[in-house]
Amino acid sequence: MHNALQAAAGRLFIHDVAPRDGFQNESGFIPTERKIELIDALSATGLAKIEVTSFTSPKAIPSLADAEAVMKGIARAPGVRYTALVPNERGCERALACGVDEINLVMSVSLSHSLANLRRTPETSIRDFARIVRQAESRASIACSLSTAFGCPFEGEVAPGPVMTAIEQLVDIGIDAIVLCDTTGMAHPRQVYEVFTRVGTRWPALALTAHFHDTRGMGLANVLAALQAGVVRFDASLGGLGGCPYAPGADGNVCTEDLVHMLALMGYDTGVDLSGLVRAASLLAQMIDHPLSSRLLRAGPSSRRYPLPEAARHPG
Amino acid sequence: MHNALQAAAGRLFIHDVAPRDGFQNESGFIPTERKIELIDALSATGLAKIEVTSFTSPKAIPSLADAEAVMKGIARAPGVRYTALVPNERGCERALACGVDEINLVMSVSLSHSLANLRRTPETSIRDFARIVRQAESRASIACSLSTAFGCPFEGEVAPGPVMTAIEQLVDIGIDAIVLCDTTGMAHPRQVYEVFTRVGTRWPALALTAHFHDTRGMGLANVLAALQAGVVRFDASLGGLGGCPYAPGADGNVCTEDLVHMLALMGYDTGVDLSGLVRAASLLAQMIDHPLSSRLLRAGPSSRRYPLPEAARHPG
Image (cartoon, rainbow over all chains, first blue to last red):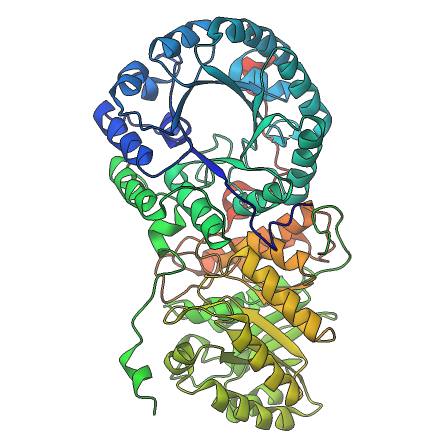
């Protein structure tokens, strides 16, 4: 077991998914220039990766209908990788035409979620991905996000077996970057530790990312468990933006600024400027019409100091 | 390091503090019979301990002015320990007259918080406690909650040194049960692991309890770290009730039902019936005039299943 509680290991890599995973779940359309403003603010914080948008059909996800305009409008910072979700070959071509650094493919581990969310079986997803991998060739790297890798809202807990099988098939078609997603916030720390340990042991060269939701409050506890399983890459969403259609009103993705705050306190080097992140979250708060779940926005960092009350300066 | 991520250890002991720590922070007065109703609902869930009230001056904390009536009105369940906060000898006498099982004394580790919150120095607190220990004799057991054991809103991070010194002095006057409190939600997992490991190693026979706040979202991550340091007793508050005067609007105590839910998923035996706890939280939600931070109330447990959408049953 990695000793995350006794000594921080080196560098961690934080990926923000708010512009895609977050905005996708917003009912109102965020104007293109505001999206660009937010992504540019994120780019300045030192994040390793930003999921910019989704090259889906505008009919399917109207809130991200401006994928090309956003991708072309942002100022690309050196050192930041810009990724976009791609559902099919058409989307891949659009993303490549915008010069994305990475294509993010998504499939579900559980059959029910795959049918409900993607209208295809996991086997069909993998067959489609094989074509997209050839299509992208050397023009962009490929990652695959595995939804319902820990639990499925229709089927319940997902065992490590199907996760291992899916990864095996993805590795076979040439994918070497995998994101294990707790799509509806069902994972718990022991499960997280077990799954990431098994995957990391079986494929030590795989670039593994953990993507947690905070639906049941276990987001940062699951991060701690993943750290102890050796995970160094984490998806999170600015302001905790993003949701889960199966838990209306519940918190969504792990909040980037809350995550970076905890990791910094623990002595990790994330390369991310926390105050810049909080400024970006304040900007985000102005763009949307509901409160963010961000704790840092509400409470400030642990380092925040309060003036001593007058009465305490002259105790009776 | 205890292997909480690889195999659950045995029994954990959950203490609910909502009737005291929670109600104390409510602006409105909860009627006595409703308090009793809530505590009776909590008693039926299998909690190890309930902090019923505070025997403070009614002028200082009007919301708990009915301490005697509540303590005498509840139906005491076998196996549950009933504790009450006591600030001084007068309060101790009142608590003993009601037959509490335990007296909960509170002092702050940091001088500023001690002066601001208790209007006395930590040294004065310990001197007062020595008298209360003699006063309580064999009529009730004594525990001491150490506020600002990880961080102080006026002074910043609190080092383990002052915590060790305070415990040493408390042990010297005969106290063998200590609660380390992260009063304003400043603690992080590495710090939690370090402090509990040091205290547990130095005083292995001490009954140690962890009391976390979720102000910065690290509540359950800190629980995970404490478990790995060997802690088996946890304070939490039904519905996440309770707050922090230095972070208005921020989440308060770790939420009991969210805590029990995570521990149950991890395979721990808490002795607590989660569905009973959620029913009690629903009852609590009707008593107060603001939303609770409880995730379980909003999202339901991880085991919750959703019907598969019709379209997914007949994929095109």
